[in-house]
Length: 173
Length: 412
Image 1 (tube, rainbow over the protein chains, first blue to last red):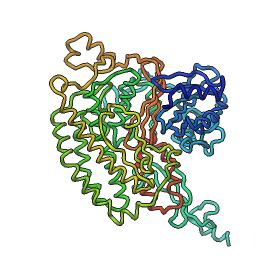
Image 2 (image 1 turned 90 degrees about the vertical axis):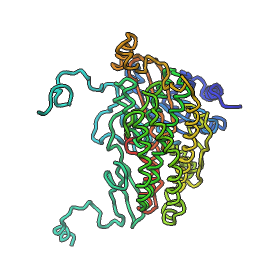
Image 3 (image 1 turned 45 degrees about the vertical axis):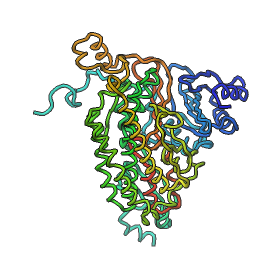
Image 4 (image 1 turned 60 degrees about the vertical axis):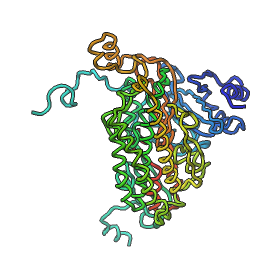
C-alpha cells in the first residue's frame, strides 16, 4: 500500500494525540505545526517509524511573521521519504524574545549549517547546536537582517543624490 | 633564553606556535585551487589534514531579502547568480515554482524547449566541473579543449535570450521568443559534434594512470553519511543512491523521456567524475529525444512558445502599441502591480549539482512574503571536513573541485 498523506497524518495523530495542529495540504504537500518543545520528538518519530521513514532533511529555514504575537518566528522543516517518494513540511513557532528551539543536528548532520544560516538571519537560538555562530554575514553584525523590521530601501526616497547612484542626472562630461 | 628569543623575534607569532607540531595553513578566500571565494583554515601534520575550518559567505548578496521587495519576474535575474555555471536550470526552476503557485499549465512544446535548455545547461556545468577536476590533477588540455563546446552552448543561449552567462532566460509560462532557426542549427551542430569530443575527453582521463591514482579512493563518503549530510545530485548518486528529481518528481514533462540514472558505488572523486561523465551522455540522449519531439509539431503548434497567461506574460510589443488590453497588462507587469494568489509552495528541480529547491510563501501581495532557496552545495559543503580529514592536502584540492562547489550558490 503506497504511503499517502492521510496515513502519515493518522500515524502522527496516534502518536502525538492532540499536539499537532493546522494540518493542510497546500499543493499536495502535507503541512502541519508542532509545539516547539517536541520538534525533535516529531522528527525522530518520523525518522524511526518503519512505515514513515522520513530520513532525508531537504530544507530547514526560518520565517518571520511580525503579526503573530508570541510566536513571531517559525522554523520550517522539509522532510523527504526517499523510499516512498513523499515529502512533508512541518513548522514550529517561537517567541521572538526567547527564540529557543532544539537543534536537529543530532538527527541530521545537514542541519548544522542550515541552522547556522537560520540563526544568522533570524536569530533563532538552536539549543544544543555544536557551533552556533554566523555563517554568511560578518561576525560583528549585531542584528538579524531577514526579520521584517528591516525593510529594504524605499526606491522612491528623495534624500539621496541620484547622480551618485547612476540614476537620473548627468554623470561625467 | 626565552627573553633572548623575544628580543630577536621580528615576527610576532601566536602563543604556543613554536611548541606545536602541526602547521596551520590558510587556503583561500582567493586561491587558484578553490575556484571561488571560500576560505579553509587547515591544520596540517606534514601533508596530512588533521582538521579544517571552513568559512563561507564572502559573496553573500542577500538575495532572499531582496526578493521580498520584487515582483516575480524581477527575481529571475537573482536566480541566475546562484549557480552561474548552469543559470538556465535556476531560471526554469524559478518559473516552474511561480507556475505552480499561479496554477499555470504550459503547452507540451514549451516543456520540451525547456528540457532542451536545461539539459544543455547540465552538460555545460558537468563539462566545467569534470574538466576542472582534470586541471587540479595537472591536465589542462582537456579543460581548454572542451571550452569551445561550452562556447557553442552559450551561443545557443545567446540566440534565445541574448545573454550568455547570467541568462535570465524564459518567462512565467514559456519563453520570451520562439527559438530561431539559427538556434536549432547550432543545436544540430552540437548534437553532431559533441559526442566525438566527449569521447575524446573521456579517453584522456578515464584510464589515465595519473588521474586514476589521484582520484580513486580520495574524498569518498558512504551512502548513509551522504544522505545524512543532505547530499543530492551527482554527488549523492556517486555513492549509489539513485535519487534524481527528474525521475522521482518529474517536472516540465520529463516523464516523456527515456533515460538512465547513472550511479556509482564508493562516492569518491573518481565515481563522482564518472557519474557526471555518464550523465552528459544521458543528457545528450534527452536532447536528441526532445529535438525529435519538437520537430514533430507542425503548423500552428510549431509556433507555440508560451502559455496564455496575460497577467504574467508580457504581451507582444506591437500589441502594446495598438491594443488597449495589451497596454494595460504591459504596464501592470512592468510596474509589478499584479497581485499573486496566497499560498505556500515548495518546488525543486534537478540542478546540475543537486536538488535546487524554491520555498515561496505568498501572502497575496505583489512580492513574495518569503523566498528561500535550497542551495545544494551550501548543504553538502559542510561535509568537506569529514571528506578530507586524514587525507593529503593535494587530495583535498581535488575533492573540493569534484564536489562542484559554486560560491555564488553557496552564499546566495
